[in-house]
Image 1 (tube, rainbow, N blue to C red):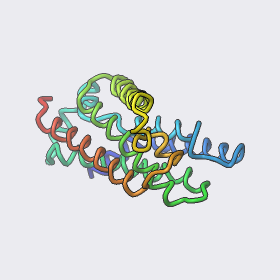
Image 2 (image 1 turned 90 degrees about the vertical axis):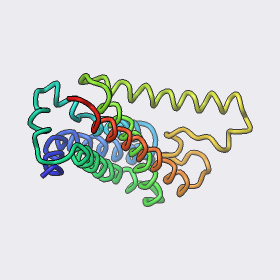
Image 3 (image 1 turned 180 degrees about the vertical axis):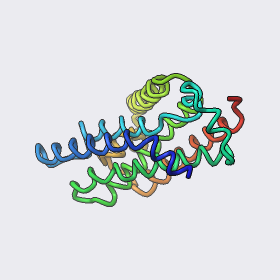
Image 4 (image 1 turned 30 degrees about the horizontal axis):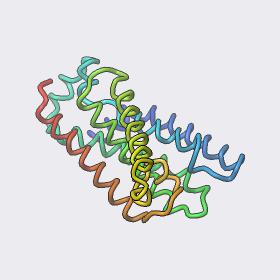
Length: 206
């Protein structure tokens, strides 16, 4: 029931994201035979942030939180259902880009891993911050901060350049790195952020 409820609440965003990402990837392939950069990648990133929106803080603003909290399930189960549905949605959303590449499986894995970390950032932000648009804006700030910091450190410490990558580079495989290691690191980051969101939600007084 919880998973179905989470799907009902998020299916509009998912269908919009699927249409937007599929269209962007198809156009990218038609225009230059490349779908892992530019508009397709940016569209996917936006959708991952959108999938992370929602949660009990948002429901409190809408007035539906008391009903949700009255359900005979724990808050952890509520968080897990919303996170699980959102993650499955981005897994599906990563398919269009990988289908148009020379190495579909590695490309799909990297988009899923990168998308999972972006989704987890937005999920945590929406669990901690109230406001309809605040979590989305904060997620973009965090993403921009990661990109800027990585590029700055590479500029100031040239010796570290072979070991530092932006998330965009990982998703697009623009620099040589281990796909398996990148997936494991991003998976660890995603799990840590989601665990933080779950821990905060279970203790929050709504």
